[in-house]
Length: 264
Image (cartoon, rainbow, N blue to C red; front, side, top):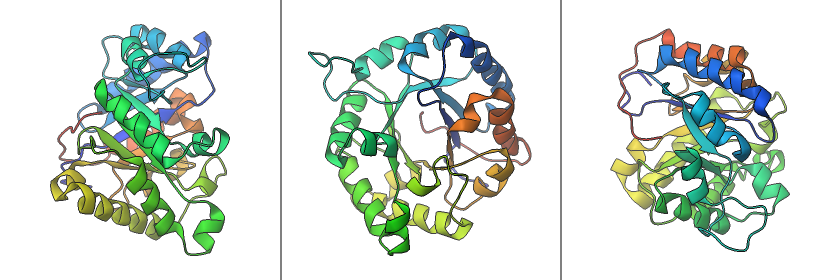
């Protein structure tokens, strides 16, 4: 990553965790992240119920806020859903879309993800689009094809190098403590960037950040975040505690990184 024009992004996905009691922990993250603001973008994606309150609680810091999903429509009779417009109104600048837990639990297709990405772009949100294979798909040699198809179908024509971040999260590594080898991750990120270049052009692909996600924690962050073509991380459980999340960010304070922000 040394000399990269892509400013790293470390985003915490709180999933279905967090209440008002979590606001102080988020403030600790925001304050600690200020030490790394020049070299890495830091984001927290809490439940939708907390976005507006976190926006107020973390005012005056560089912490970015994101949602965890949005509906493809701007408004309407969609009980229980949240629109991209609502996320912006609450203070979000990004939204996670196509996470494997949404694809599995809610049967979301890549086409439905693409529709949501387009909705996010319509209101100026950056879309963090998740892709990844299952353990069976990897062992059968289908990982590249599966992830490639997800990338191809999940990104609408509104995609640019600035308004999309890809998060590669092998499904079998999420929350399991298992991670692919550094070679596997580097190769997959290279495959993803090549596909982006083929569809959107070399300039867009070069600008787009590709994060790694899947059991990222303080113990393995230094190894994972130094892999070629890894532009940061989408962090799950370790983002719920300021001490752990800041320890992951700490690796960016151990070296000089020439960066230019490309949106978050």
